[in-house]
Length: 195
Image (cartoon, rainbow, N blue to C red):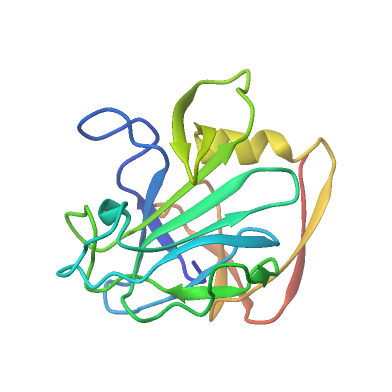
């Protein structure tokens, strides 16, 4: 999302039953409806535009959602987006950080409140803990997004990001309880180093 996130409410394998395939993200501001952005470039392989009432589909629990297959075979899914907010359709090629739709307010699908469910699945069984499932007719292995993304950045690799939110707050530590050290303005390009 292009906003500051408070936390994820349900982590990987959390919730009931304990087979949650991703993480649930909530924006810090409960009044805004931020844009949901593509994690990386790829091809849209599934879209659903569900209103939370008339959900006669194979995957009603996902609500209004988008799934993208990336060049390396990974699939990312974005679920519980706002009804009628989708900016992409099946077969579209998307760029990294392209707007897919809006955060779901009100919520839809199998959801107890507004949040963005985001998950990553791989085409082959990884060495780390995973959940095996079928999606779009393929066997997929869902992994915890946080450690997966952390380990995919190599030592001393640098990544450039463009700030898409109104501002990026750099904090003293990991978490919202730490003091803000500086604020970086929208459209500023920042380079992040993995040390």
